[in-house]
Image (cartoon, rainbow, N blue to C red; front, top):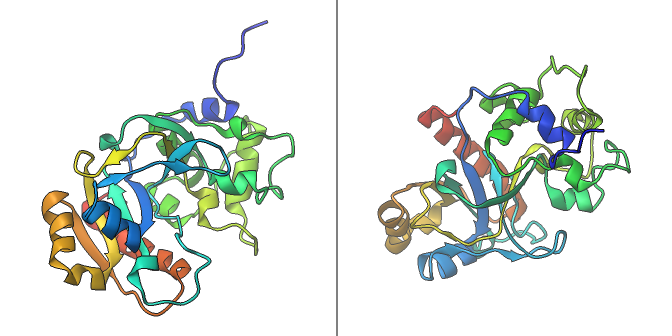
Length: 262
């Protein structure tokens, strides 16, 4: 009997679909308080924090999509401290990736995907290694292009023949259009890092933040001069921070189009 390889069948399936598309950026979203206090006026480093779902300290990114919603339980406010700030990183400047998954692992652990996944399916069955090429292979296999992945549009010609049950379950999850407890993170590739990321060492391509924060010269200088990144403001009104993501997604899409990434 052959010895089982140290990889999931889901990853093996992806590895059979090498990608020809460009790698997308890695998106990390925080809030205005952390951005100003810890980054602009602090050490300028993104620090891993304790994860209540997986244990240990983890720094989370999403592949291509700014999908995370900080402070989503906060009610309407105009204070920028509660609203979202998103970093788009050049993927080649982020090393030491710990693990990659095809969806938000917190939602998996919270059993929000149970309508689509067999109860015998464990998180490790969906591990995608630590090479970003697996993320791009997933884009090709299930979405077809960077643009379609960004919009969450699944391929209509997805071929189930020969696909493992995990791939079929994932396709069911990302294809569903009905009302559910899940959000866009169900089809956003999650990148886990266990190390801190220094913003001045890693290459930040753009920072998307409430436009009023750009009135502060020190903040604008931090982004454009210290990070050599593009500062992109979005309209931030008296609303819940959970509404920020749509505006940030729109700004990110415009940025990607200008850079020829989608």
